[in-house]
Length: 328
Image (cartoon, rainbow, N blue to C red; front, side, top):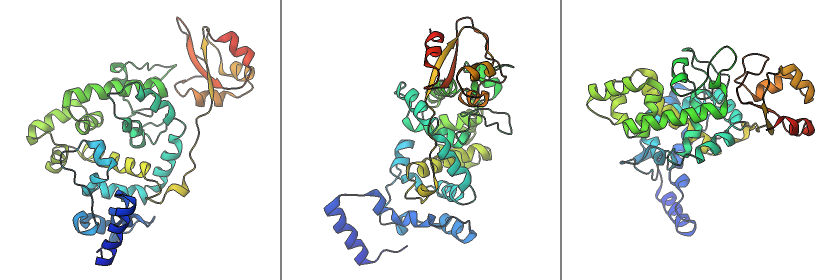
């Protein structure tokens, strides 16, 4: 998109009166994504897009921290990010919309946990968009489970219980806390969130070897060098693309297609005895499936034994007198 002299003057006048607006200055970028159907021609146009010629202004990346470059759109200077935005808005559009919709059931809980860990960027709350599509029951081809997609061997390392009765990789609160602990460790080891996130996907050893082999710890240089396997080389561009869409739903024209799910109000019981979900559902005027949905870590129709008490969520507003007797 080439800007005429009149267009430039008009935008400058608007800027004087209303202030700098990054959306206006990078508008040519968003025009690339005004079609929901995939086309090879549009894909090629996105690859060849030149931000310095085809937008009035797009901030430079320079040495910005990763999440800052997402927030000011400068990350869109990376061809891979532009491409994955296009994929997620066309062939992956259904996945993107459902993931954003499901996020509403869990994002408040995840945000509240991250706020208690001020060293963790707030945007980490959106990593489940990429990992699981915000589905706590998600299972990958490699058998990773839950919102944060932990492998069974990793779950023990991060303190998550996984046995025949409970799989805490599916517990929203516990798996989020485990992901934070793991990401904090990776950040301390590698010194950047890009590398920490790549290691979250590919493993510490893989990233360490890639850095040694390529002679650089810059994630974009590592990707360019071919030192990373395909999945890990795509991880950061995919995550950036999904964050951009999530944060700018109106600009990417998906806002009207999304109906955000809401987290169901719940009470947390403290059970000292093992209970059947059928018994509990009858007591609380609900059904076992609803209780299981609120407690996705349960693998059977029985609550686990616990030395102290087992926390179990039930729908709020039902049988308050019973709840008062069961909470300790």
